[in-house]
Length: 137
Image (tube, rainbow, N blue to C red; front, side, top):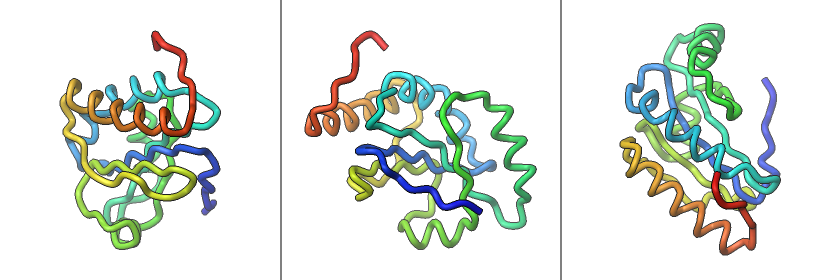
């Protein structure tokens, strides 16, 4: 397995697993956010966490059917991820600024609420960091 280094100013990590219905419902909304915030200083990742005894091939097949454009990272062990990051419910969103967690929580998955909450968090962060995102995305 490869270790991922988060070298962007802002990194958004969307944690999910293949048995989480709300996770699947929010993928189209997360896609909109990932399209809006395309910038060299921002990275947006889907992070698939395996269920107990779930094979890697099965996870790849599920992810391939989703058809989203942002990158998926595959976690190695659910308990290890949950214990290290301090959460146990999915979907779970973590936002890093310069590799430090500045937001960790669950966003409601309805489009208007999800987009509004995540968009508001990202707008605040990019403004504080002087990152310019072109309008009309």
